[in-house]
Figure 1: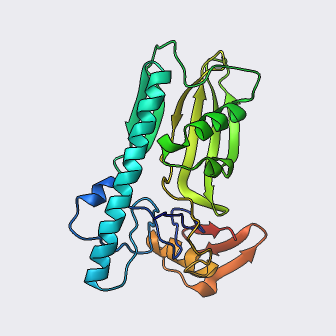
Figure 2: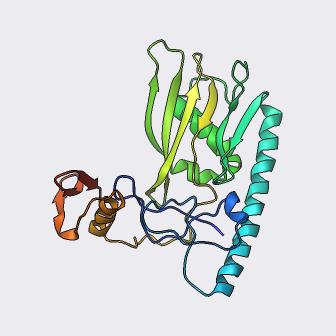
Length: 250
């Protein structure tokens, strides 16, 4: 089974009717639970509906699939540790996948040595070669969008930012930050990506209309709003009240 993302339409809210990933801590719960539309996160959401028996069967199948995926991640980590000395990997308690991959501070080793390639090319090449460690498929890395690159004023540190997208939809909080040393070595990546989520079996039709999503975004932060107050703007949709402005893109 594969799990995919929801489309964020407003600040602090990500709401669509898509299935999403289970995570390691969920394995320990007795039964899957439902989440409200507010504060939707692909990493922790579970599908609702169906009988108790079907829900239990689906949960059992998801548990087995997740365990198999996590074993693949562990094998990939062991393989990388043979090639990179002083490897440091921190796993997310939410997804079971790495949220930090790097080398120990002060170490002379690196994830990838500097070359004539750009920082963006270097981190993409590393992610593609080690996709299994991140719970990804190589093709998924190609769908990441470059958000930006930069260097500190003293040149001691550079970085590249990539945003995860699945089916052309940005993943909520799906940013990966890659850090480079002064001489251009890739030394660390940080980010809580949605893993095991190629989205191949997911519908692309949102569960909410755009105006509904903006209203729910406002309601989630305690602002009384209605669809009638949502206005079309060149940058998307806008809901303005005396106390706050909520905007969402198409």
